[in-house]
Amino acid sequence: MTTTNPIIQIKNVYKHYGDLTALNDVSLDIEKGEKVVILGPSGSGKSTLLRSINRLEQIDRGQIIVDGENIVDPANDINKIRQELGMVFQSFNLFPHKTVLQNLTMAPMKLKGVPKDEARETAMRLLTRVGIPDKAGVFPSKLSGGQQQRVAIARALAMNPKIMLFDEPTSALDPEMIGEVLDVMVKLAKDGMTMVVVTHEMGFAREVADRVVFMDYGQVVEVGPPTHFFENPQHERTKLFMKQIL
Ligand code: ADP
Ligand code: MG
Image (tube, rainbow, N blue to C red):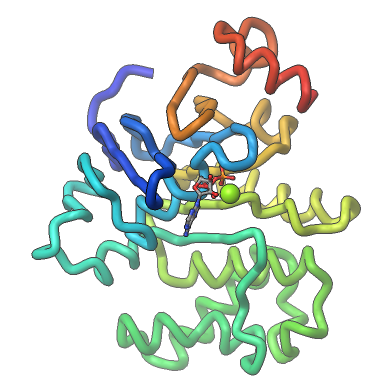
C-alpha cells in the first residue's frame, strides 16, 4: 500500500521500562480505513505499542501523530485525541455496577455532552449491531465472555471513534465464543473502520488485514500483506513464529 495520508504516523518510537527496551525504534504509518494486524511473541511490545498510540503509555523518544495531532506534545488535549481512538482490551473492562446500556451511554453523555435520549438511541443501535439489543438492561456479570466483549466493542463505538485499537480481544474467551466477537470485528472492518488489531487469530488476519506487522524484541521485524506471512516470510524470527502459530 502506498503511503499517502496516514491517519496514524509512528516515527522512531522508543519506550523503556528500566533497563528493558519495550519499543526499539518502531516506525509505522497506518492509512485511513486500513486494517493492520500486529503479530508477535509474548513480550515483543505489541501492547506497549497500542497503548502508546492513545498515550496510556508515555513514549521516551520519537513521534506519534494521530489524525494530524502529535499526541506526545503536552500542549495537545489528550482527552480529545483519545475520543478518536476506541480501545478494546483482552479483559473486557466493563463497569460492573452499570447496566449494559449505561456502559454505553456514560462516556458520550459525560465527555461529549450528548443528550440522554440521543445517547440511548445510539447505544441501542450499537447493541443491535453487535447482536445483543436484548441485553441492554442487564449487568455485565450476567453475560458470557463473548457477550461482554461485544458490549465492550459497542461501548468503544459509542464515542464515534475514527480508529479502533484491539489488544488480543479474543484471547480471554472460551473457544466457542471467539467467532461471535470476530464476526463483529469483520463487520466493522467491512464498514470501513481504521483498525489496529493485536491477535493470534490467523483466520481473521487472512480475511481482514491489509497488512500484517510482525514484532519481536520491541522491533518491527517484517511488514506485508497476510499472504506474504503465510507463504513467504523473510526473516528467521518470523518463520519460526509462523511455524509455531499455524
Ligand atoms: P506484548 O503485548 O507483545 O506481550 P508488552 O508490550 O506487554 O508485550 O511488553 C513488552 C515488554 O515490556 C515485556 O518484556 C514486558 O514485560 C515489559 N513491560 C510491559 N509493561 C511493563 C510495565 N508496566 N513495567 C515494566 N515492564 C513492562
Ligand atoms: Mg500484550
